[in-house]
Image (cartoon, rainbow, N blue to C red):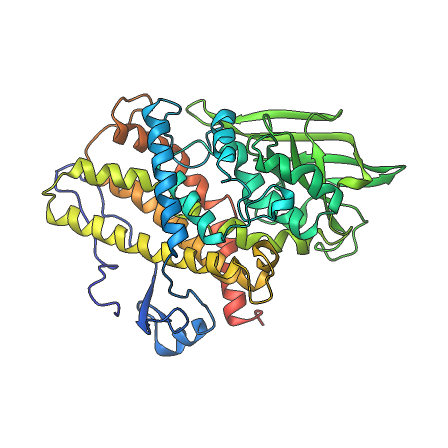
Length: 449
């Protein structure tokens, strides 16, 4: 299957007389050239020369089919979510930014938090593909997953790989029970995209460290119990990537101040966090002192490759299709078909990474295999997913002549209002588009000369 007929370069215009411009052209997407087995798939980039496509010969998004346990689990999750919505347990909101402690406890009681972790730490030792299925269904249902999101996706796997036995025993079972919530303290006012420029410092004192600095864009810091803090534990050496470490800081510790960052619509989940001489015990160090940069970058495959990178606005696409009806005009058919094709491409890419994270022949479990080797694939998913999510919003605005209203009773109008406000954030969180494309170029082309 090649690129012909993909419609990537075509404009899709409104059928009314509003004067709205065309939908933005899509970026290149991967297409299958040959092979059907799980390890024989070759990829090309639409519009690229044969020489340019050679750059991608080491990029692997292998084909696969979900195993029977994952398919059975999908039905269980769907039934659970259907029952929760019918009971009025939650109101669907797009993304994973709604915080609901009671919902998180229900999810935990079914073994769906930390499900890939060892049983001795509260996990279920299930596959990353099964975790993928749970995440996908939660996003499709617009369920409120914020309370356990970071603990399940990043904190837990990081502790499994780098944490001491004491830290694993202290935090992992509590996260898996839905009783402990984590945030991430990485970005700073002048160190967002350029994370290696963090200024927050930790000075060694008797029994631990004193941390002083500021973090920003910290989701749910006002409700989380603790957060991972990337900070400097050594004087500047000329290499910004050296001397960085990760500490777990309790968010109710003396010296912590949390201030909200509100959207234009008044909603709030981002925060600034100020650390003023905060004491952190020595046993809260994650991994090795001075190895923080290596540890953070090894987590990127976990953060950038999941279904949340392309499914945040998926429910809006579903509602758009319902709004267009059974007989949409040709322009609408083309737009929806193009979006659906890219959705399946991204899903396949993300699933392939989930398969790679699963146990290898040596039995090594998931998170330990999420190394920098997957950084290119994860960055591609994140970059293409960001564009795709914005494109759904643009298509909805162009194809459905409605005024988005945040408090609308109509689901489509409410989702559209939510995504207009929140979709631009996708170009920043988890790595800006510019940073991701630089990473991809360097991995494929080598260092610039």
